[in-house]
Image 1 (cartoon, rainbow, N blue to C red):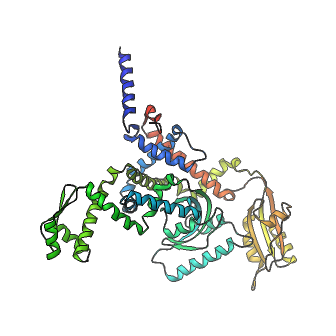
Image 2 (image 1 turned 30 degrees about the vertical axis):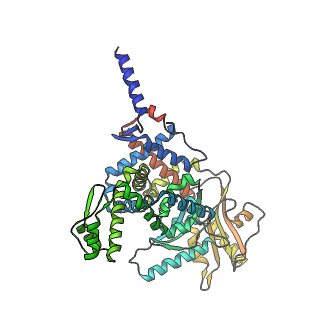
Image 3 (image 1 turned 90 degrees about the vertical axis):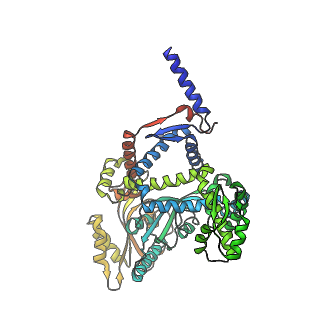
Length: 516
């Protein structure tokens, strides 16, 4: 009998949960997560990985991991800092404008913008590396000029007939060394304009943003999906358009009806004739607004009295709608929560798994040693140097000298031995070269038939080094190793979070995701 009763209670609970319009799908460290929140996150993830979307059951793990990270960030108080609150308030201000418009006007404007961006080949997201020098506002003009000259020289080296490697310049010169994805409204407008206009694999000229000076390389692009999938993101973009101010006016008449705007004509006439009144001017959503409220507003808005009053009414109505947005529009609430959690995830990930790795030489070397077999190359590479010389004698001599030295002494030897009062007699390119990286290595080492570029003033070129099947040092595979090590650190962090977390998932509700 007890078993039968328990089964009945369990079945009834499952039936009740599935019958709710938005049931609790999971509970993470005591916090309820509704099905709608999970569906929003899952469906957005699917739209960004349309070629290989995860089934909802597999997406659960990554969703829970993200929530655990956010929970830790909140326990650390990251969401209480002034910088965090300012970013969140700024995002809400932009997002609010996308809701305070007439929906028909909104769709027409969004459609025009989508068509314009698609015609111009805009991507939804781009993956970048950049050579970045932070320039504070207090920097002297001479220091800014130094940064400008440095970036110009780097750009010339990156676009030379035999270019230097972009990743090498990032590692040596950039204040930000890791690749990253960016979407709309996540970076300053100056940065976004350049980043989204470049095709995959291309490099920008140096350009300024409020943060500093950049040279950007686009590593990958996620192209734009359909208008339906993109509309909510396009609405963010519309916040910058002046035509939105006209659309706001189209909404006011609707909101007056929604919130039962009731003017007191006698008081309004008194205000217009005398310039002030103590009487109630109008009621909105059950609240009365008086001449004193208007007077306080008018101090900060010096205009003719009628324009002041019209602006006061408009602001009051929009403020009323603004206060209701989270309750009135579930999507607005989800967008705000998504942005808040994205900020928290970025900060906590940097603290726990990302920021320390690029500077932890000992840990990177140890990780490389433990996993060295993972970094063997499919085809041999050439570890050595390409030496462009002014004459045959210099070419023969430098090759002979470098063969007797370890490779970490080569640059010093060339600098000390071949620098003259008129310049360098030998120009060296040192590194690990795969087929296709350097035309001189392709021809002289890999014996490929290629057209060699002319190197002005250095007509004789020789190589010194050796072929090898895998790297000797983590620095030879720095970018790949760094990404692997950061993932390793993040996985350890997730294991720690999981070990102390309490996660409950309602499997019956999970089965109804996108199926109710």
